[in-house]
Image 1 (cartoon, rainbow, N blue to C red):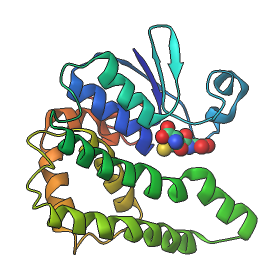
Image 2 (spheres, protein in one colour):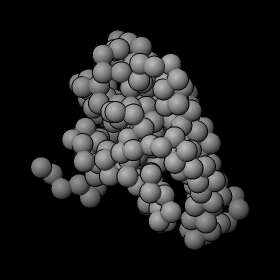
Image 3 (tube, rainbow, N blue to C red):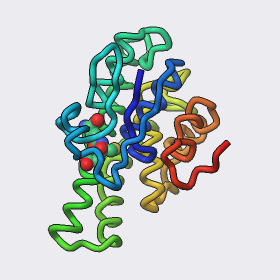
Image 4 (tube, helix red, strand yellow):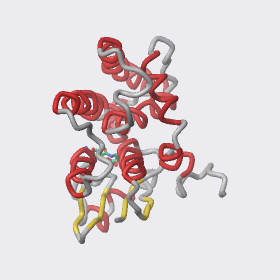
Length: 215
Ligand SMILES: N[C@@H](CCC(=O)N[C@@H](CS)C(=O)NCC(=O)O)C(=O)O
């Protein structure tokens, strides 16, 4: 399997965590979002959305992260990202899709670029935008986790929800989001970051991270 991604793209990070949790071998191929490689003809010929991640497996290109995650579980059912019980599966999807659908879209690179290029917004103003949309979904998410009595993880092992949560928390920290009033999210983040699968998938440890210290 080949994963085309970018070290701090949250959707690429989702796929890296999932592949690690499932113990599937893959080759990581960086696509440089800073230079716009994802919009070049060579890449858009394979992914008309012009975004990462692109997952190449069994001679096919798959180009949307949530569908890729569901496909990984369908095609490789061992070490499932979803629990067995149907209501637990529902809950994992409810929380994962809240992040993927409500949170990710207004925080994506083209949206931020549009705010600065078309509306002349400064980096400070973009930070305000970013934190506004984070709070709008992370607040209810935290309340939902409290309501469910969530412990260190949503269920007994990390899965679809944690795969989506950790990258979003990483991005939120880059934009100085204050997690003071978010004990459940912080606890889940700490529990995941203690695991080698999450550490291997982390942006700090990717070959295309310019600040990475080679092992
Ligand atoms: N809905 C897509 C979103 C993918 C996406 O927005 N990827 C971002 C990185 S996290 C990207 O490639 N942004 C660069 C661009 O769109 O030009 C998915 O879930 O795969």
